[in-house]
Length: 244
Image (cartoon, rainbow, N blue to C red; front, side, top):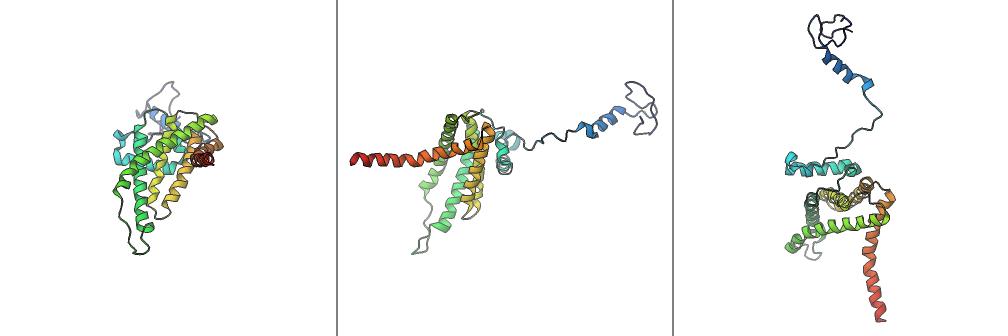
């Protein structure tokens, strides 16, 4: 063994910490060599590809705007991995507030595009002004949709035996998948792209968070949609049948 500083051969002395010739700290060299040594690295270990901390839920560290930006970025770039270690505790306030902001923003942008491109009067060529009542109702409606949709999906998961976590985990998946609403800034096709990406995130988010299968996750989304769409038809059919 030689000293890395003076290059002289060291005597074989047990627990030797300093070079007897130049006084260099030998333990630092050893720690550095251990750190560099390939034998200390496990190349087969799965890399940590995603930090499970959600910036939005740590505003003291990141601040309001940075936590909003980082969370949206992490959802869009992390994909299903974002939801892998999603919590099922901690309260509803933070995820619902995030969903409220993104859903309202996306809806307002989409509404603006519809006024600009889709609602012009064909005769006069003018576009009606924005409806204050509709704008005021957007946040309330968005919040209701998130809560009810998460509840319907989680209930279906429980029935199918695929609920690996509590309802709050499903609520967080639905809430943070609202990050795709930012794509509403794309004219005309932004809403469609946002919806497709959101469904993708919800399906694989449920799969990852609840440790279930892709088929169960897809059914958890489709079955409530089928019930909601078919229920009015059954009610209408029952009313018509009673009148005959």
